[in-house]
Figure 1 (cartoon, rainbow, N blue to C red):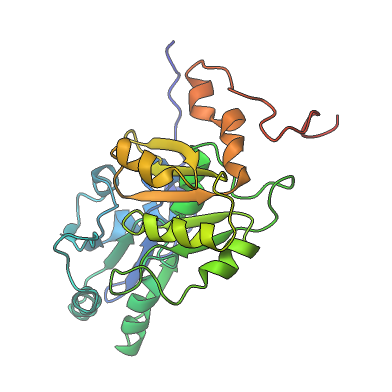
Figure 2 (cartoon, rainbow, N blue to C red; figure 1 turned 90 degrees about the vertical axis):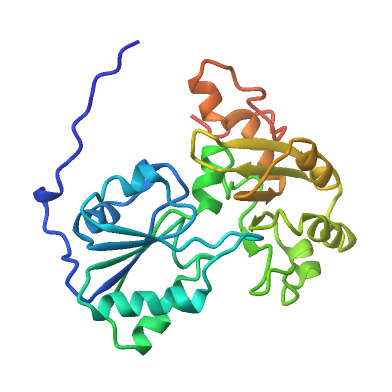
Length: 287
């Protein structure tokens, strides 16, 4: 089947913010799919003199800014990475040279992205900034897997946590017992390294070992993989599947909705595995 081409709206049809020399815009690039960029992000890409980007920003996005210098500043666990302080000061130095600086970060810069730290450093050095939010992987990545982070029949709240602290160790400041008892759905960023410890703490705190879990890797890209398992089996199953970061881990009954809402499988012509995965026995909404 041949699809008709669509014409995207021109940015010239609106009045858009101007990236002035000496400014730094901290911008979320979304979880991977270039189509999930905001129009403000696209506007920034077209104006920047230099782009300082992280490890989760794809070439397809950078290709939209051929006029800019591209500086890699990725931080990946267990690999040689630039120090956060050095990245922040690089932004300051580029701005002081009169560059139009775009700091491009995967997901949303203020959601486990160190964007707050970088913004604080810039403000302390009197560098003017603009914040451009992006779609966080904990929401957008799960949506691409067919998992809604909220659903009235399953959960009215969701807890987002990081799987490691500033040192790279499992976070000791989190009360996993309270999270286990009170959070209907738990979404964990950067948790693969410490998954054995995290899952054992949750189970010890009373979380059901049979609770549904999904692990979504390289979300929203052509390499996306989704593992559906349980809390007690996720470590073993993730290892057997050779899953690797970047990954989002989702714990809660809402994972079951993927059986009905795996929209990418449906688009490929596959029928839903279960149209009533929650066992409601009735339509989701009355006519």
